[in-house]
Amino acid sequence: MCDYSLQHVKSRDAVIGDKLITLNFGMGTVGFKGEDTVGTGETPIAVCIRPGTELGFAEPIKLRKRVTDGWAMISDPPQTTEFAAAIFRQVNKEIAHVHHDTLEFPDGSTVLLDYLAEFQHAHVLQLPAEPKNEAEVQEQTRCEFVG
Image 1 (spheres, rainbow, N blue to C red):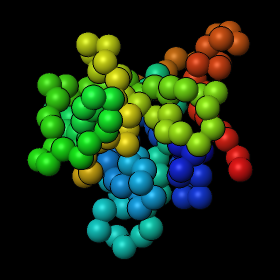
Image 2: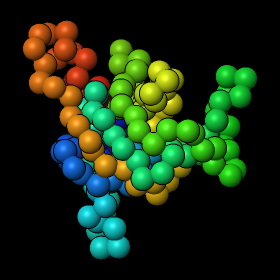
Image 3: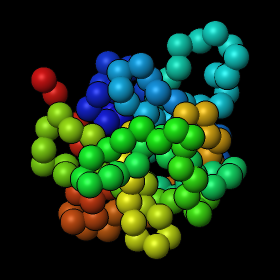
Image 4: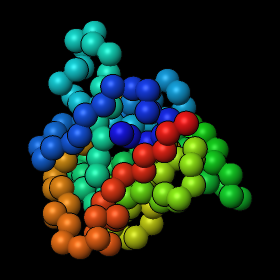
């Protein structure tokens, strides 16, 4: 399952080489859909990404929201970062009904996926290595809150 607010959207797991597009799924949540459904008229299928997955973007990543004085504000025009690559992470896994999906940039900073501008092209560069112990299993497990 993708982030909690996409639990009612059809989804599939990401695979290496997937070509993705950022999309607002109409519920206040930005996520990824496959490029293969562009212009087909099909309902977008959310592509769920495991924590630790490396993503490459076609251009520097653009943000539609920025944080000012602790508040997320719409940024018009979108703010452009200096990064075209990121690692998918999840934060606050123990808290239900908040956004968990984030991107970690090469400088160690993170941004909620919900802050990304729409229609950015990305691809899955690498999936995380298979976990070797319980701690790694927990780190790679996506949040799955029901209710």
